[in-house]
Length: 222
Image (tube, rainbow, N blue to C red):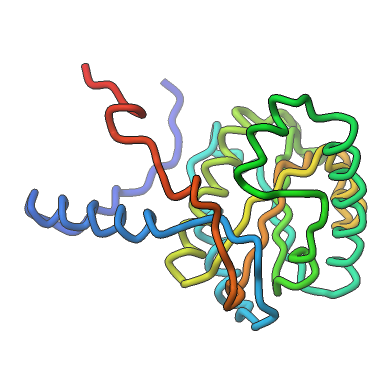
Protein backbone atom coordinates (compact mmCIF):
# COMPACT_ATOMS: atom_id res chain seq x y z
CA UNK A 1 0.00 0.00 0.00
CA UNK A 2 1.36 3.43 -0.94
CA UNK A 3 2.27 5.63 1.95
CA UNK A 4 0.35 8.85 2.42
CA UNK A 5 0.49 11.65 4.93
CA UNK A 6 -1.83 11.30 7.90
CA UNK A 7 -3.00 13.38 10.83
CA UNK A 8 -4.34 12.17 14.17
CA UNK A 9 -8.10 11.86 14.53
CA UNK A 10 -9.59 14.74 16.49
CA UNK A 11 -11.84 13.04 19.04
CA UNK A 12 -15.36 14.29 19.65
CA UNK A 13 -16.26 15.36 23.20
CA UNK A 14 -17.11 12.37 25.35
CA UNK A 15 -20.87 12.28 25.82
CA UNK A 16 -23.36 9.94 27.40
CA UNK A 17 -25.95 8.35 25.13
CA UNK A 18 -28.55 10.56 26.80
CA UNK A 19 -26.56 13.67 25.92
CA UNK A 20 -26.13 12.49 22.31
CA UNK A 21 -29.86 11.94 21.97
CA UNK A 22 -30.57 15.37 23.46
CA UNK A 23 -28.14 17.04 21.06
CA UNK A 24 -29.58 15.24 18.07
CA UNK A 25 -33.14 16.12 19.04
CA UNK A 26 -32.20 19.75 19.73
CA UNK A 27 -30.73 20.04 16.24
CA UNK A 28 -33.81 18.36 14.79
CA UNK A 29 -36.06 20.87 16.56
CA UNK A 30 -34.02 23.77 15.24
CA UNK A 31 -33.98 22.52 11.66
CA UNK A 32 -37.68 21.65 11.77
CA UNK A 33 -38.41 25.37 11.99
CA UNK A 34 -36.67 26.06 8.67
CA UNK A 35 -38.93 27.00 5.76
CA UNK A 36 -38.28 28.41 2.33
CA UNK A 37 -38.85 32.16 2.36
CA UNK A 38 -40.13 34.14 -0.62
CA UNK A 39 -40.62 37.53 1.05
CA UNK A 40 -37.43 39.22 2.27
CA UNK A 41 -36.65 42.54 3.88
CA UNK A 42 -33.78 44.83 2.92
CA UNK A 43 -32.32 44.54 6.42
CA UNK A 44 -28.59 43.83 6.01
CA UNK A 45 -26.85 40.63 7.02
CA UNK A 46 -23.20 40.90 8.12
CA UNK A 47 -20.68 39.51 5.66
CA UNK A 48 -19.17 37.52 8.53
CA UNK A 49 -22.34 35.40 8.69
CA UNK A 50 -22.06 34.54 5.00
CA UNK A 51 -18.36 33.81 5.37
CA UNK A 52 -19.04 31.37 8.23
CA UNK A 53 -21.73 29.63 6.18
CA UNK A 54 -19.41 29.26 3.20
CA UNK A 55 -16.64 27.88 5.40
CA UNK A 56 -19.12 25.37 6.83
CA UNK A 57 -19.96 24.37 3.25
CA UNK A 58 -16.27 24.00 2.54
CA UNK A 59 -15.95 21.50 5.40
CA UNK A 60 -18.21 19.00 3.62
CA UNK A 61 -16.97 15.60 2.46
CA UNK A 62 -16.31 15.29 -1.27
CA UNK A 63 -15.30 12.66 -3.79
CA UNK A 64 -11.54 12.08 -3.49
CA UNK A 65 -11.45 15.28 -1.40
CA UNK A 66 -11.53 17.28 -4.63
CA UNK A 67 -13.83 19.88 -3.05
CA UNK A 68 -15.47 20.59 -6.43
CA UNK A 69 -17.44 23.67 -5.45
CA UNK A 70 -17.37 27.41 -5.80
CA UNK A 71 -19.75 29.84 -4.10
CA UNK A 72 -20.21 33.35 -5.45
CA UNK A 73 -21.66 35.66 -2.78
CA UNK A 74 -23.52 38.52 -4.44
CA UNK A 75 -24.55 41.76 -2.72
CA UNK A 76 -24.19 44.50 -5.35
CA UNK A 77 -27.42 45.95 -6.70
CA UNK A 78 -26.18 45.76 -10.29
CA UNK A 79 -25.43 42.05 -10.12
CA UNK A 80 -28.71 41.24 -8.35
CA UNK A 81 -30.68 43.18 -10.95
CA UNK A 82 -28.93 41.34 -13.78
CA UNK A 83 -29.73 38.03 -12.15
CA UNK A 84 -33.38 38.94 -11.61
CA UNK A 85 -33.82 39.98 -15.24
CA UNK A 86 -32.29 36.73 -16.49
CA UNK A 87 -34.17 34.55 -13.99
CA UNK A 88 -37.56 36.07 -14.73
CA UNK A 89 -37.07 35.62 -18.47
CA UNK A 90 -36.33 31.92 -17.96
CA UNK A 91 -39.23 31.60 -15.52
CA UNK A 92 -41.69 33.15 -17.99
CA UNK A 93 -40.62 30.58 -20.56
CA UNK A 94 -40.98 27.83 -17.98
CA UNK A 95 -44.47 28.76 -16.83
CA UNK A 96 -45.85 29.51 -20.29
CA UNK A 97 -44.07 27.04 -22.59
CA UNK A 98 -41.76 24.49 -21.02
CA UNK A 99 -43.39 23.08 -17.89
CA UNK A 100 -45.85 20.18 -18.34
CA UNK A 101 -49.22 20.50 -16.69
CA UNK A 102 -48.34 17.93 -14.02
CA UNK A 103 -45.40 20.09 -12.90
CA UNK A 104 -47.49 23.25 -12.86
CA UNK A 105 -50.15 21.44 -10.86
CA UNK A 106 -47.54 20.41 -8.27
CA UNK A 107 -46.39 24.03 -7.96
CA UNK A 108 -49.82 25.62 -7.53
CA UNK A 109 -50.05 24.99 -3.74
CA UNK A 110 -46.81 26.96 -3.38
CA UNK A 111 -48.20 30.02 -5.13
CA UNK A 112 -45.05 30.52 -7.20
CA UNK A 113 -44.82 32.43 -10.48
CA UNK A 114 -42.35 34.09 -12.80
CA UNK A 115 -41.96 37.29 -10.77
CA UNK A 116 -39.02 37.14 -8.34
CA UNK A 117 -38.69 40.53 -6.63
CA UNK A 118 -36.84 39.00 -3.68
CA UNK A 119 -33.80 38.54 -5.94
CA UNK A 120 -33.23 42.30 -5.67
CA UNK A 121 -34.59 42.83 -2.16
CA UNK A 122 -32.66 40.19 -0.19
CA UNK A 123 -29.21 41.39 0.92
CA UNK A 124 -27.40 38.30 -0.37
CA UNK A 125 -27.59 35.87 -3.26
CA UNK A 126 -25.21 32.93 -3.30
CA UNK A 127 -24.63 31.22 -6.64
CA UNK A 128 -23.52 27.61 -6.20
CA UNK A 129 -21.23 26.20 -8.88
CA UNK A 130 -20.08 22.62 -9.42
CA UNK A 131 -16.57 22.23 -10.81
CA UNK A 132 -16.77 19.32 -13.22
CA UNK A 133 -13.02 19.39 -13.72
CA UNK A 134 -10.05 21.52 -12.74
CA UNK A 135 -8.38 23.23 -15.67
CA UNK A 136 -4.96 23.69 -14.08
CA UNK A 137 -4.16 20.25 -12.67
CA UNK A 138 -2.46 17.15 -14.02
CA UNK A 139 -5.49 15.08 -13.01
CA UNK A 140 -8.33 17.40 -13.88
CA UNK A 141 -11.33 15.14 -13.32
CA UNK A 142 -13.50 15.62 -10.24
CA UNK A 143 -15.60 12.81 -8.79
CA UNK A 144 -19.16 12.65 -7.43
CA UNK A 145 -19.46 16.33 -8.16
CA UNK A 146 -23.22 16.83 -7.81
CA UNK A 147 -23.37 14.76 -4.64
CA UNK A 148 -20.44 16.62 -3.07
CA UNK A 149 -21.76 20.09 -3.90
CA UNK A 150 -25.24 19.19 -2.68
CA UNK A 151 -23.90 18.06 0.70
CA UNK A 152 -21.86 21.27 0.98
CA UNK A 153 -24.89 23.40 0.19
CA UNK A 154 -26.91 21.60 2.84
CA UNK A 155 -24.31 22.48 5.45
CA UNK A 156 -24.40 26.08 4.28
CA UNK A 157 -28.19 26.22 4.60
CA UNK A 158 -28.05 24.70 8.08
CA UNK A 159 -25.47 27.27 9.18
CA UNK A 160 -27.50 30.18 7.84
CA UNK A 161 -30.62 28.88 9.57
CA UNK A 162 -28.74 28.48 12.86
CA UNK A 163 -27.71 32.14 12.50
CA UNK A 164 -31.35 33.20 12.12
CA UNK A 165 -31.10 33.87 8.37
CA UNK A 166 -33.99 32.94 6.10
CA UNK A 167 -33.17 31.19 2.84
CA UNK A 168 -34.65 30.09 -0.44
CA UNK A 169 -33.17 27.58 -2.86
CA UNK A 170 -33.89 28.67 -6.42
CA UNK A 171 -33.08 26.58 -9.49
CA UNK A 172 -33.81 28.49 -12.70
CA UNK A 173 -33.18 26.46 -15.84
CA UNK A 174 -31.06 26.95 -17.81
CA UNK A 175 -28.67 28.78 -15.47
CA UNK A 176 -25.63 29.46 -17.65
CA UNK A 177 -26.25 33.21 -17.30
CA UNK A 178 -24.83 32.87 -13.78
CA UNK A 179 -21.41 32.07 -15.26
CA UNK A 180 -21.52 35.40 -17.07
CA UNK A 181 -22.79 37.48 -14.15
CA UNK A 182 -20.44 35.82 -11.66
CA UNK A 183 -17.49 35.69 -14.07
CA UNK A 184 -16.99 31.98 -13.61
CA UNK A 185 -15.22 29.68 -16.10
CA UNK A 186 -16.87 27.14 -18.39
CA UNK A 187 -15.73 24.17 -16.32
CA UNK A 188 -18.12 25.27 -13.57
CA UNK A 189 -21.79 24.38 -13.84
CA UNK A 190 -24.26 26.49 -11.86
CA UNK A 191 -26.43 24.20 -9.73
CA UNK A 192 -28.57 26.53 -7.68
CA UNK A 193 -29.05 30.04 -6.39
CA UNK A 194 -29.49 30.61 -2.65
CA UNK A 195 -31.37 33.71 -1.51
CA UNK A 196 -30.37 34.74 2.02
CA UNK A 197 -31.59 37.47 4.33
CA UNK A 198 -34.16 38.39 6.94
CA UNK A 199 -37.78 37.49 6.30
CA UNK A 200 -40.15 40.38 5.65
CA UNK A 201 -42.53 41.19 8.50
CA UNK A 202 -45.48 40.05 6.39
CA UNK A 203 -43.80 36.90 5.07
CA UNK A 204 -46.03 33.87 4.69
CA UNK A 205 -45.38 30.22 3.90
CA UNK A 206 -47.70 27.88 1.98
CA UNK A 207 -49.67 25.78 4.43
CA UNK A 208 -48.90 22.65 2.41
CA UNK A 209 -45.18 22.95 3.15
CA UNK A 210 -45.68 22.68 6.90
CA UNK A 211 -46.45 19.01 6.58
CA UNK A 212 -43.31 16.84 6.42
CA UNK A 213 -43.25 13.11 5.79
CA UNK A 214 -43.18 10.94 8.90
CA UNK A 215 -40.17 8.83 9.84
CA UNK A 216 -41.78 5.66 8.55
CA UNK A 217 -42.33 7.32 5.17
CA UNK A 218 -38.72 8.36 4.65
CA UNK A 219 -36.80 5.47 6.21
CA UNK A 220 -36.51 1.72 6.50
CA UNK A 221 -34.58 -0.30 9.06
CA UNK A 222 -32.79 -3.60 8.47
